[in-house]
Image: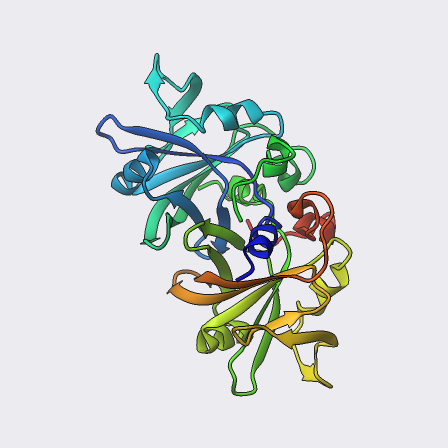
Length: 167
Length: 167
């Protein structure tokens, strides 16, 4: 395989930026910036997330069996970088960000424009990141969007000219 | 669940536009425009595609066990619409488009800027579209890209102000 071509062609896939959250109910709360996300079905509404298999967030998510994807807004580049670091809960905030429990118990970031809560329906343990399939159980629009919804989300290309996660 | 919120928040996920191709070696060639795609691992390089479970393309792909994702370029909106319709092979072309067999046998559209060939490693049969997981076996850069790779690909939002596939 031509590895240069593989890297470039895989980097053609456009990505939004999300904060993946989960709470295992035993005091462990996960919050991690992710971008490998796609919807995979309408009925029921299913989404896939690729999650780093050796990460703390993945362990908590697997125990919790529910998670949220918090969609970051165009102006929330700082939050993307906040959640590249391990999360901590202090003073009722998640790495300094206000949140509330969603219907499933997954943390919802109040300042993110939107979020979905999902129940894990399958995990495929292949590769250095595993495929987590979730059925959307609840959705939150935390503030009105203007224009196309996919024009409101923070994208990988907004993080910097040479920032990629893929390839 | 609030269905309006679910639709809007899921539509925040940005998508590129791809032509999914497969050849079962028994005279059946698939080519269908898809958008539900994400990478899910670096090592090995894995991608997920959500494929309509009752489609002809899905049947061919499942038999072939290999497929290609042809990344469309910004200027190839016409190809996206060409492959919304059932594909046909005539005069050595696929719905009028020049192609060649890749290393795996999957059809590679010569005019697409890039393509990856994948071997199916798992299928999750959940929902009206199924999750097809593929390991990247070969990648083709058919012409040089300028700027960020993810700025070169045709996106859902380029197809029309009110065109969505998701929600």
